[in-house]
Length: 219
Image (cartoon, rainbow, N blue to C red; front, side, top):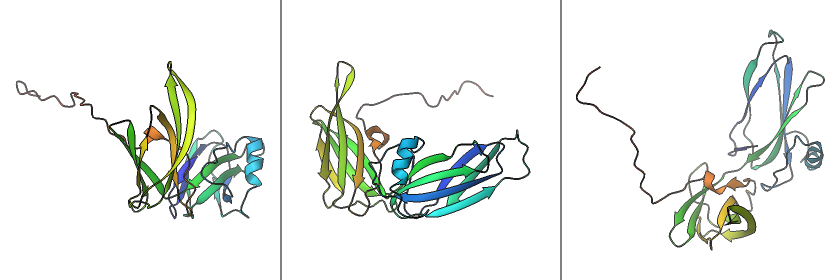
């Protein structure tokens, strides 16, 4: 799965051999960012396809002539920018017996940053990924877990509303945040992201040698 900002080209890097052409389609599906199914699973694919919002939003065909059957070909394709939503990306080859490649594409301008605070608290800010400005009144969903005897237990999920500054402070109560997502009434397409994949700050000082300068010798 990939996440892109609105109106930003959706790019796909591909690597293959013995294929004459590939046809790419992007189809919007009527789900929100909580959808995390694997479209390569046939049962999940049928469920997602049933939620398609009409015909494919975009289609692109690429041909690859003049390459030996054993030659590895690398390419990058870009489809035009899209409005906020969740899309199904499919790549179909001209070779029979070659499976269709599928992936979910999330298009959202929501972005989360976080900062650990004293007192078992976390400061969370929701920003517009394109402008960097706070998103007033955005909602933040958090999935928590507890660690007991070196094992993690699912705990709870909560939803909080940010203030006019796009921020909120979470009280952890000896819990850890596993994943988070932010959304608004008009952009509910950010997927769940691991909490520690965002900004974090630690008070501990870390000393390490990054440069050694010797004045008693020459090269």
